[in-house]
Image (tube, rainbow, N blue to C red):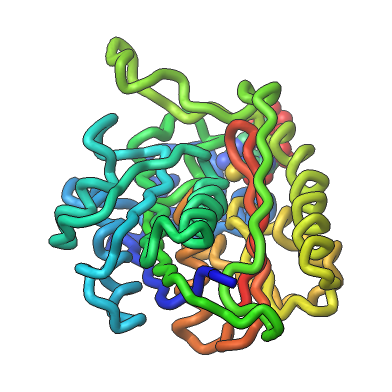
Amino acid sequence: MRRSLFAGIGGYLPARSLTNDQLAAEYQLETSDEWIRERTGIERRHIANAEETAAFMGAHAARRALAMAGIDATRIDCIIVATSTPDQAFPATAVTIQAALGITQGFAFDLSAACSGFVYALSVADAMIRTGQVQAALVIGTEIYSRILNWQDRGTCVLFGDGAGAALLLADEQPDDAPPIGVLSTHLHADGRYGDILYIDGATGQNDKPQHLVMNGREVFRHAVGKLAGAVEEALKANHLTTADIDWLVPHQANRRIIDAMGKRLNLNDNQVVVTVDHHANTSAASIPLALAEAINDGRIKPGHLVLIEALGGGLTWGSALIRL
Ligand code: COA
């Protein structure tokens, strides 16, 4: 059976990091460190400079994933970039990254699924690898929400940060009777009826007004845990596994309260849940690969561990994946 091995992971964060207090002072926000920490768990976030675009950050993260795997960029035949904040409408940010990495073979495209983007992109790459269309894929989440935030809206602008993460998947033939390694399954969902609770008000083609993120936080919160738990149950059932088999939960990093609720629901200890929302804030499609990079690089997640990832975002979109490292 052909599967997608998780061969490398890398992250990139802008050098500039702002605490809640620094952010409030810089943008003259009527907020407090206490309010933000209590409601979200966020303490600081990275904010990109002019040079650090989605493609710039994504290319850096991809180089780190390639270096970790010891794979030359010339072996990559597919680049999928999950982003809601591309450098341009086209060429796709994936194509800009392809050029930055010196790759001239294969194909590259962007995928839009907001904060679920990495799970969606992983699912697409995994399907292409399983069918034999792709041998080596870079799956990248890269986001620069600081450019689409309404800095007058304290209800949203304190929640997000910039950054990128990249995973390298390699096709691997595995015996049918051996325990599977790599991406075990992905489960995706969308329900466009809820498009109006989290969106960007405008498109690149409508340049008569600035584009800003708009969110009804309470409504998003209301949907999050139930929908995520459903996607997780599906993943476990499809693989004949239970919550007791999970070594690590690496959730999308939107809000500490949602993360804690999911950990509790899955009967996991705090030390089985990777949390970066405190120092990254919500980096949308980049948050899961950034969290994976942090926990793999510091040795918490080890080869053989079973990792569950899940995300929910604008759309609404949501999904889960199980990966045996
Ligand atoms: N600082 C201080 N006060 C703030 C504030 C801030 N940064 N942002 C909002 N407030 C105020 C509001 O103005 C409101 O004041 P009012 O009662 O006088 O009108 C009060 O706090 C409560 O606002 P509300 O939006 O109802 O707060 P909440 O308890 O729902 O918390 C979120 C807001 C955003 C933290 C919460 O809804 C949430 O986490 N939602 C999920 C968001 C999410 O995960 N999005 C990403 C999905 S990918």
